[in-house]
Length: 138
Image 1 (tube, rainbow, N blue to C red):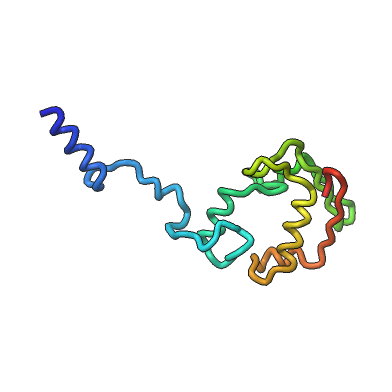
Image 2 (cartoon, one colour):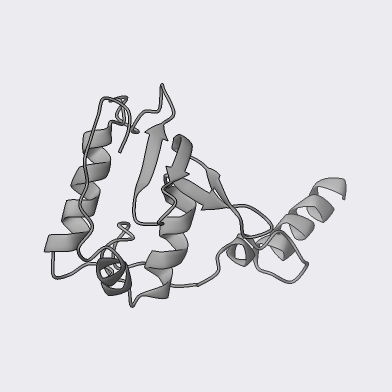
């Protein structure tokens, strides 16, 4: 009797008769993204949502909307607001184990500026941006 009851409850949860966890609620969009690269497919809401979950940035916005360092250890903005300097946090690695370098940041900016199939809003924002590098600063 107990075994039969357990199987009935398990089947009910599996088929949605009795509530069980619905992990789809964690996704903002219930679509399969066209790409996992947030720099491609800027018109696909699934790409944007997944990209924000998978990728980090030099800075991120905190709960009050103020930028805080993420991959960057620190950042400075010149008094005229035209020059930004990001010092990378040491020891950051790609999923392959390779170190994240200032050259990787420069390559990302170059990709956005030269590829026609990128996030057009970001490409417009980075239009005319020049990147200079030192060992750990962009």
